[in-house]
Length: 254
Image 1 (cartoon, rainbow, N blue to C red):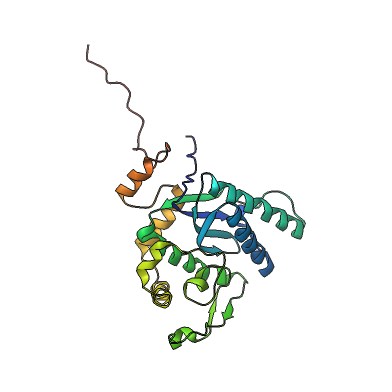
Image 2: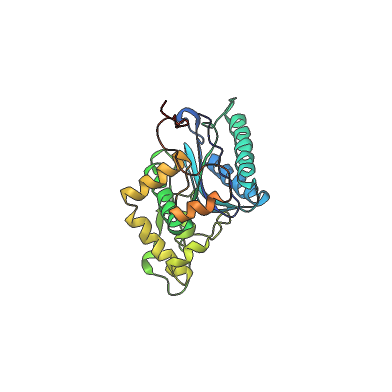
């Protein structure tokens, strides 16, 4: 069966993921992930891709992005991937591919899935990023009037993700706002508090499975009307085919 083409729809939210080949590390030191971050910032500006959230881990990268122009997502991911592999191979004296095939991508209905996917990526940082030798950082709190004392306290966070930005621990120039986040509150402080509560509560099993299944399959994640509207924008099939062999023409009895 022919492999389905990857969706790359401008002005729509995408969850993208790329992994190391044969589960090998794509980063061996803090400086490697710093280079990854700089490349994402540079290439996202060059290809007009908004990055709403990200998690750069030792063996994989996850991100929520919105391309602005046709073909922007593919050009962006290819540009980052090519330049990072050149850096990594040169630094560690290796040759050949670093990635496990092409990057995975699926389209998400922003409400409610953007916030849930952000929480999902923060969960990956806690379960994977903090257990592979990349130490977290205690980021200084923002000194703003009337902030919650609990948020003012130093907290250890994984530094190569968008978590610190969305809970108000730092301003990350790579991260772009998305209108779906406004539902969390009327002020930045309210949104930061409510998002931190969502991360602390975590995702339900059904939500986590939905995100992982959609990313693995490439099918859009959203309700029926959302998928139907997407289908008007692409000739690629957006729902699984019915199981079994295709039916042939019906034969009339002799």
